[in-house]
Length: 302
Image 1 (tube, rainbow, N blue to C red):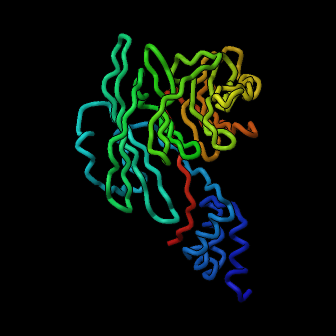
Image 2 (image 1 turned 60 degrees about the vertical axis):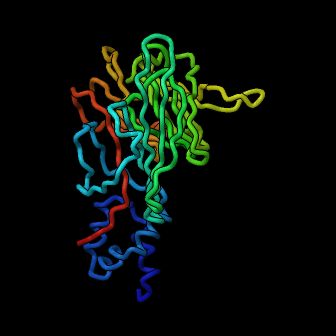
Image 3 (image 1 turned 45 degrees about the vertical axis):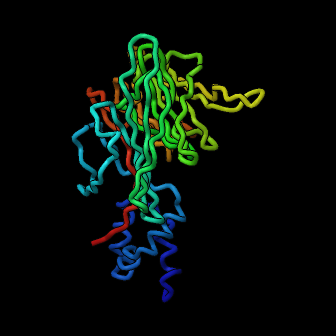
């Protein structure tokens, strides 16, 4: 083949996993050159849309990025405090830009009473933080649960001794709101729930109860008022062939792009695709941790 564009159609249709692309690059020097071309990476992204999951990071506040690269910038004076802080990073690969949403909140009183949560957004293009945004909350942000992007909203889990809920930050209007959790299920344990991105970019919930998992979606009900609706109940003991004595299941992480959840059992950590219910037993461990999956199109061949 003399046409490089036509030749590149072959590896584009292969699996985007690094091992597959590495093998393809070893076919000949011409293939190696094609797979190293930035244009090929753009076409690969356009064709597959969903990058493959390369691995998971276990929760560790001292862990640096995988590449070891860092970029530092000053945070607003209102966030230089000892109050609870958390952040979310949003990247636009096509423009090579990013946004950071930074949150902090005051201590939530143990008795009845509200606390204030504050947010500000950093835009890499302008290098400027937005003005301060605030809202009232009755429970703190749970630090070990990563934020979830659903549509144009970032969502964090709020969990306290008095109440639980979801803190929603609308990226379009740059406003904060609290979504109540009004579902018929026990969500007292932080390890039994997970915020989800459901069909149509709606906000959802996965809740483990006994040996099953319930999938809920927030939809508009009668009169246009949003309400929680149960979408599916899956018996995990049957799906995963769990032993009778298995009585404790823990949600350890979630990938919103792949709609994949990670669940700890006493026979291993399972990765379950919540749409197809296809699953895989990844490994066995006695350590209960929080997993943060990472995905990437990796085509660089040295």
